[in-house]
Image (tube, rainbow, N blue to C red; front, side):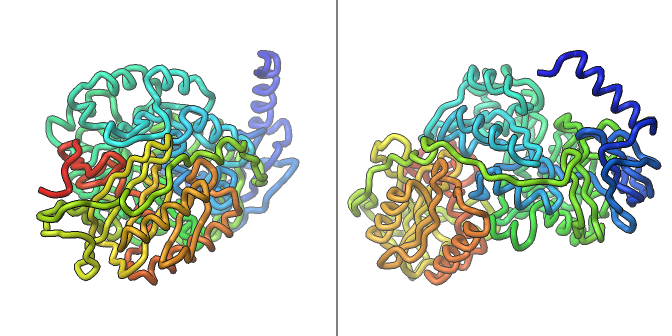
Length: 557
C-alpha cells in the first residue's frame, strides 16, 4: 500500500501534466476521438500519466503515438464472461483479446470455483496481474448452481463475504437460482444480503410478479433474455439487459429492437470458442455483428464501453480525463479494424504463467464399464432436445427402447468427477445427429462433471475413460480414440498456447462432424446439456432434471 505522501505526489504530478506544465508519459497525437457521451468525433491529443488519461487537447509526451487518420475509442469491456469457457488460461486469453481491442472484462469465475472453490477465484485474479487485461471478478453466487448437481466445492455466504474483500472483486455474480430467490429460500437470501456492489442476475423466461420479486431482491441485470418482449419487460422494470452474442447462443438479432438503450450491454457470456476468437474476434466481432444488424456505430460502442463501465462502477469506458488509459486506435470504425492498443497507459506485453501442480489433478472419477451407463426399460421417454445456436433445450416424448440412431435418439450421461462417488446420470437426447461413436468432455456447466453423448454404451465408456486418464479434456471415440484435447488446468483449461488449443479443437470438431453431427458448436452445446438452471430438460450426475419444475424426473413416464 502506498503512503499518503506518495499519493499526494502522484496526484500533484497528474495535475501538472493535465495543466500542460509537465510532459506526459504518453501522448496519442491528433486522434479522431469518438466520444461515447456526446456521440461526436473530435480531433485532439490524448495525454496519459501513469495509467490514467489526464488531458484531451494539445500535449507533448515523453513517448508519442502518431494517430493521424485513426479513430480513438475506449477499450472494450465485456460486462459478463466466463474466461474458463474459452479453454484458455487468463494469460492466453489476454494475449488473444487485448490486441483486438478488449481491455477489460468482468468475469464470473464460477466455472473454476465449481472445481476449486475460493482458491480458483484467487488463482484467476493472481494470474491476471501478469497480463495487460483489466480483470474484475464477481463473487460466484451459485456454487453449485443448484442442489440438482454435484460440484467440487461449495461457496456459502461467509465465503462470499471473504471473496468480496479481495482486490478486484466488485459484486455478486449471476444469481442463477432464481426459484430460490422468488421463494425466499434461506441459502440464497443470505448470500444476497451479504453482497456488496452490483448483483448480477440470471432469469431466463421469468415474468410478472415472479420477476418483480427477483428484482426486488436487489438483482440489477440479466443476460438470459431470448425474445424482444422478455427483454423489454426487464428494461421496463429497471433491469440492465445484457445482450448475449456468442458462438452457440446468439440473441442479438432477436433483441436488436432494444439495443442502444442506455441500460443495455453487449456481452459474450463466455460463449466464444478459441477458434472463433482467433478467426473472427471477441468483442470486436460482436461490435461488427451489431453494426450488421443496423445498430448505429456509436450506440454499439456505448454498449461495449460506457454502459458496462457505469453499471459496474469501473473507471473506464470513455476517453476522458481521470479514466483508465485503455485506448484502442482504429483504421476503420465501422469495421473495427485495430491499428494499435494502449492498455493501462502502455502498449501491451504478454507473459506466460506457471500454474501450481495441484490444479492439474482434479479429475477423481472412477472408470466406467457399460453396465454403469445402461438405461433399463422401455416405454414413453422424456428426451432432451438440443437446438443449434441455443443453450436452452426442449423436451419431446417418444416411445424408446434404447439408443436409436435412425431417429437421432442417442444417450447422454454425466459422470460425477470430483469425489469418485461413481454416480452417473443418464438420459436420452436428440439433435446431435451422430451416426456412430461418442464424445466426452470435462466441460459441463456448471459443476464440470464429465458429460458424454454417444451411439453405444461401449463408445461412451471409451470416451469418458480417456477423459479421466487425461485429467480433463475433450475426447472423440469411434471404435478407438480418434481425437482429443487435454484440459489439465482444473479439468477445464489448457496450459498450451492458444493456437495449439485452437488446432486441436478444430480436429475435435472435424471428428464430431464426421460422426454425423451438424451443430455449429457441438462442444459448447454438449457442455450446456448438464446445466440445471436453463430450461427445459437437462441431465446431471443426479439424473434427468426438469428445470421448470426444479426437480429430478424419471426417464420413462
